[in-house]
Length: 255
Ligand SMILES: Nc1ncnc2c1ncn2[C@@H]1O[C@H](COP(=O)(O)OP(=O)(O)OP(=O)(O)O)[C@@H](O)[C@H]1O
Ligand SMILES: [Mg+2]
Image 1 (cartoon, rainbow, N blue to C red):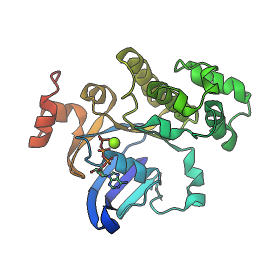
Image 2 (cartoon, rainbow, N blue to C red; image 1 turned 60 degrees about the vertical axis):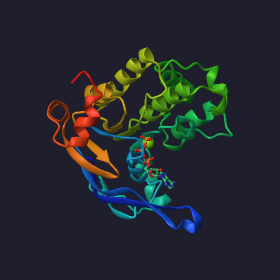
Image 3 (cartoon, rainbow, N blue to C red; image 1 turned 90 degrees about the vertical axis):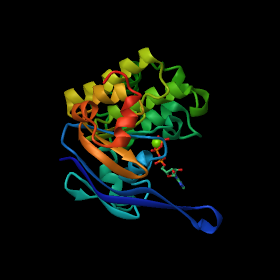
């Protein structure tokens, strides 16, 4: 097992003096096996991104624990998180968030290579060239700033950067939402290849059920911050138990 999420909850305080409480994630538990792609599905606002942010250490859980490779990473400080930064990578739902808005994209691609000392055998420029050509980004485009490229270009670059670090776990939050169908197929192939060739385990979130079925061995279905059904993808797609899952899948004609 590479990741275990145990009884995880997150309550947001917002509104006037933070008096308004939202239980975005409520007692969620699941695990991801080594080399597995595990999917999370559920309607908008059900808490998927909140879970990813807690796994990445960007948000402190209200309750519960996150265990990565047998180590409890739930309440680590920035320094304690450092050894996990390379091992756990994320492709954000909003890919522009990935990049430093004040630096050009070349800087953002070179930064993790420098931090993790990856350019020993190959020089940095060659590594970056190799990284971007797989996702159809040119060196010319790297001279731009994050706000000067399209959402799809940012998404492709963020996937390329995350994969170049050869993480143990890749969290993909709607990784291809901004790509057209032909580019999407190519990028999904790249992600799947990272899983099959290098054994990268993944938490994979998508609203596209066809993509979920193609990518994930097991899935969890979420509603209002809770997991209501979990199991093998094909079993859930062929024989959903929960009424909500049936409703969710009924919009998907390829069952
Ligand atoms: N920083 C925040 N402060 C207050 N409430 C928040 C915050 N971030 C998210 N929420 C609320 O928490 C709930 C879960 O949000 P989350 O972004 O995790 O949903 P999601 O499942 O990722 O949705 P989508 O499919 O639209 O991306 C929503 O009701 C959202 O409005
Ligand atoms: Mg989300």
